Image (cartoon, rainbow, N blue to C red; front, side, top):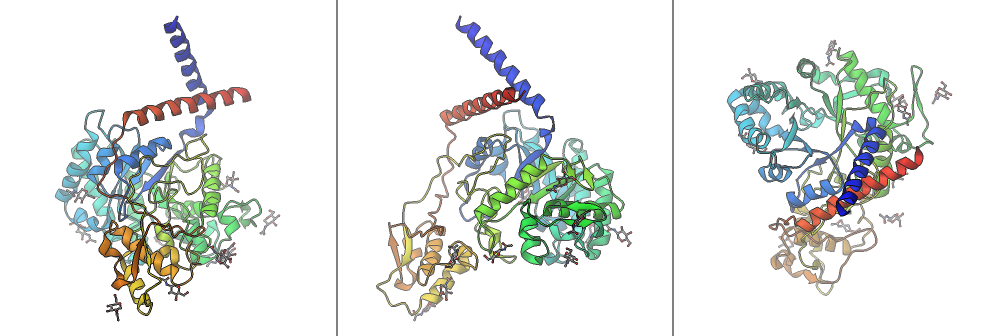
Length: 494
Ligand SMILES: *[C@@H]1O[C@H](CO)[C@@H](O)[C@H](O)[C@H]1NC(C)=O
Ligand SMILES: *[C@@H]1O[C@H](CO)[C@@H](O)[C@H](O)[C@H]1NC(C)=O
Ligand SMILES: *[C@@H]1O[C@H](CO)[C@@H](O)[C@H](O)[C@H]1NC(C)=O
Ligand SMILES: *[C@@H]1O[C@H](CO)[C@@H](O)[C@H](O)[C@H]1NC(C)=O
Ligand SMILES: *[C@@H]1O[C@H](CO)[C@@H](O)[C@H](O)[C@H]1NC(C)=O
Ligand SMILES: *[C@@H]1O[C@H](CO)[C@@H](O)[C@H](O)[C@H]1NC(C)=O
Ligand SMILES: *[C@@H]1O[C@H](CO)[C@@H](O)[C@H](O)[C@H]1NC(C)=O
Ligand SMILES: *[C@@H]1O[C@H](CO)[C@@H](O)[C@H](O)[C@H]1NC(C)=O
Ligand SMILES: *[C@@H]1O[C@H](CO)[C@@H](O)[C@H](O)[C@H]1NC(C)=O
Ligand SMILES: *[C@@H]1O[C@H](CO)[C@@H](O)[C@H](O)[C@H]1NC(C)=O
């Protein structure tokens, strides 16, 4: 009897799984995330992988080839892009041997490991936005040579069919003088290299890999309204040779499509390697605006492409970013440290549907924090040297939330100095001497956070959280239940 029941249940589940598959033929549209690790206390890789699985993220882009990270992805079904940092491009261009070593150390052993620990590496991304105008000629002249050597190395180990090479292209590598897609072209200063890139990609049937940044378009050039960037129905459309543009995404994407066409490569597939909206450190960088943007984007990707590429949405789209990174350069702006959908400690900042159906994000589990202690200004001491101490703290700590438009900009003096002290103290693992500040610091157990300005507690850095079996089982069950519920809902609509 019991076994018949089980049999029945199994059949039912299989039927439901089939229903959901039939219902989502276009769900092949893959959504991934960028997993950057420029943080003073990064969340341990095993916990991040758990976070990806809990949120049913199926693709991830890495910026390097860190062994701990790759090992933690072993045995998962998550598709991986492994990154080659800009600083390695020069040697990979000039030496095939260097490329072979890179493939040997950073690829082969992960790809060819047994099924229980193999990593599903799908792409190597060569360089990290090496065409950014602010980099000048530091990196991009090496990118095609490096890509070619890596490909030769891949052929040698018979991985060239399985793993494709892509070359990340920055948001500012293409533009349109008129502000309309019909004027799309690549920057003239990168013309020669870009032609080589396109020839390489086309020859090896690799997609064009690009950053699209409506936030930066809005923030830097102010030539696109916030409504247009955020997919608002009320946005004033732009007309371009009979085509109407109602959102900044369609505008940017078709500007790129036109640039590809006018360079002679109209049919290259496109992967959006980075797209997102920051939540702090600048005006209009807030969680609620970021939520509007990501929701608009995800809703839009389900639909039918853009005016210049109808029915052909990007092959894959990687949201930038998974987690906040407190060590990212703020040269471009203080918002650079706040691109995460999740805070540095894996807590959702807002709610979006990353996984086709579940409307809530799942937070990181079993996060190991330091103690509930903060470092603040001791109000009983003379304050004369406080400004010098604050700027010293901010020179290494993360004070980006204090900048104009940031979540802690409204803190009055000396509470803003307390913020700086605390950031420094947490970054130094709450060591007592990191709250000295010439006698002006005071360790407290009372949370100084005010309103939306949060004084974070740091992560315990040396602990890698064990993945316990009950959590895994729980995850499995919740996925089965989600599929079941989804399928029931769909049957209702039939
Ligand atoms: C890339 O390497 C090749 C082969 O060593 C070399 O001829 C070329 O000058 C290098 N490119 C640059 C930009 O240095
Ligand atoms: C493998 O990748 C890591 C991280 O990007 C890098 O430090 C290392 O030099 C690479 N190995 C080789 C042989 O290039
Ligand atoms: C901004 O967009 C408008 C079209 O709405 C265009 O006329 C103008 O040239 C653009 N400016 C820049 C700097 O792209
Ligand atoms: C764009 O064209 C449509 C008709 O094709 C027109 O109704 C609309 O006013 C135009 N919008 C702008 C901003 O010119
Ligand atoms: C480079 O410039 C030439 C001549 O203007 C043009 O034909 C070609 O399409 C340009 N290539 C790219 C990648 O923009
Ligand atoms: C962006 O933020 C600024 C400062 O908060 C605000 O004045 C402005 O209205 C915002 N921009 C838009 C288009 O809402
Ligand atoms: C973007 O372009 C596609 C294809 O033309 C269209 O279906 C979609 O509605 C456009 N998005 C918006 C918000 O205009
Ligand atoms: C003020 O702070 C700076 C930076 O920490 C330190 O070098 C200097 O000695 C301090 N001056 C006094 C009077 O405490
Ligand atoms: C800061 O204060 C201004 C004026 O009091 C207010 O409009 C703004 O919303 C506040 N910003 C934050 C992030 O609390
Ligand atoms: C704190 O606020 C005061 C007064 O508004 C300002 O002069 C100072 O630069 C701020 N300090 C920091 C670290 O933001």
